[in-house]
Length: 220
Image 1 (cartoon, helix red, strand yellow):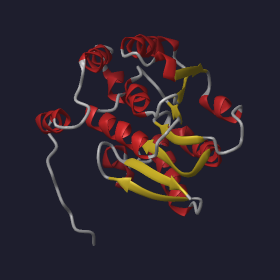
Image 2 (image 1 turned 90 degrees about the horizontal axis):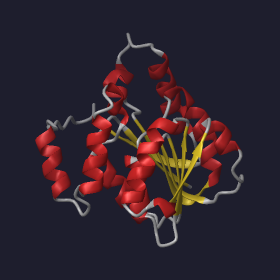
Image 3 (image 1 turned 180 degrees about the horizontal axis):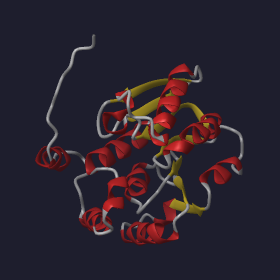
Image 4 (image 1 turned 30 degrees about the vertical axis):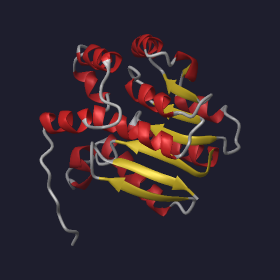
């Protein structure tokens, strides 16, 4: 049995950690988070500021000049990735919602990052399949409809270079991934996704039991 280490994560603890990271929240990020919270329950789709800092760091660690995101929502994660890109870097964002990504565009412009981000509206799977098949990306982040994760994975892995990173959010689904009585479509899709990633010999992968479960996979 694995050793269990429990750290109660409160809002205050997250604020403490974020304030001591290299990228504490600035005015643009704070305003974007507040505007997203005002949308109501859907605001739960936005990643936390601590996870945003991790995205920036991981983007810098791989020296990313080309990144792709599936599921952009109001643009916070894209903002964090774009800030980590090497000079001249570009991020492609895939999303279907003009309403939510309009909020994203405003934030990116305020942050001076609009020239680094290309938004492609439409079904993400179609966008991915229209991309060149060669491994041209350094980093990919998936945070979209859970039923599509496995299809997105199959399209993204061949397009990420050796040594590049693939990230997938929400893979532990508030712990319901272990609940034998949980059989809703999202849980079933995530179980299938997690099993497929674990068996995929093209990558080396770990799941962080942090945030809502984050898969980090390095392309071999």
